[in-house]
Image 1: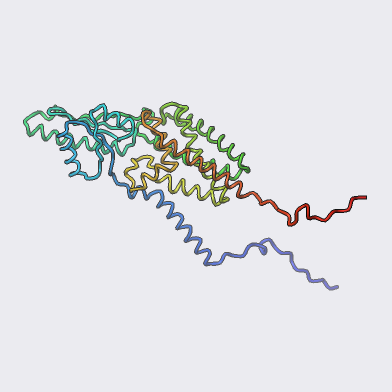
Image 2: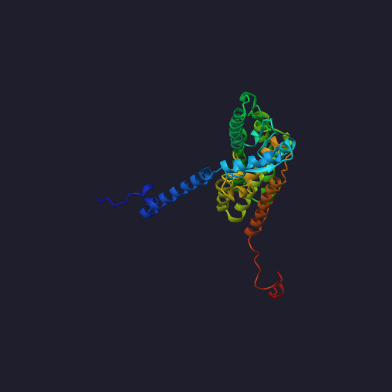
Length: 364
């Protein structure tokens, strides 16, 4: 009895996808390395090009003393400090508290020691520069007193912190680190709403609810619990909520208009461009021109400046930061609405109108 030939059933491995071609595999590795290089360049380029220059600092004192100090400063460190004239010590303090300058130099008259005003809450970089400048002034003053035959121990340059940091954050690392949850919160919210919520109205409602709840949660953690942020709690919560709303609304808008590729566009503009240019821990004047100024008109830069001012500089004007965040939020809403109408299917118009149709026979 003959046994019929039967072919074995196809195994799952025989139905697998064909192997990737070698040129494609090599190209994938090269493209991946270029993406990693772009990420490293985006985050480290501002640090590489960082250079202390054009730091606004108030100066007050007799006209001759100010002129001599400015000349000596330009000779020793040209372009490093941009002196802003103040009518007196009180005016210099007011300029610091309103964030017009990062510190001040008060030059006394004959027989009076200079005073250096700092604002540690404005950032450690400017404070270190002014502290070093105080050391240089002290060396010059000691040399002058010694040359005149006086006692150098009686001449001391006073360093006064006008806007100090909170005791819960003495180094300011918590305040600078608060920029990360603001950026990541907006990214996470925008991606989740883009993928999980369908419908323009529902997306806008989800954005509003996300902003309100995130503002309250982060304010409770960063201010009430950790003590990194100061100032009025509700105003801080509003600033945080608007910051994450501006990022998430923009990502949702890009996603609505461009599909999932829009999520990548929003993330690149926020994380790879806006965040490195935000100058969260340094004066934005230190970045290469004009990138420092451009960064203040993006969401990370505006939100960092706003939260720092709300915490430590209540007298400063935050109009620019509020409007920048409102503008990005409005842009995201407009893109979301445009994407909704763009994705709606076109209405089918029949070739013949109802009047041109042939009459149908009446049913029996």
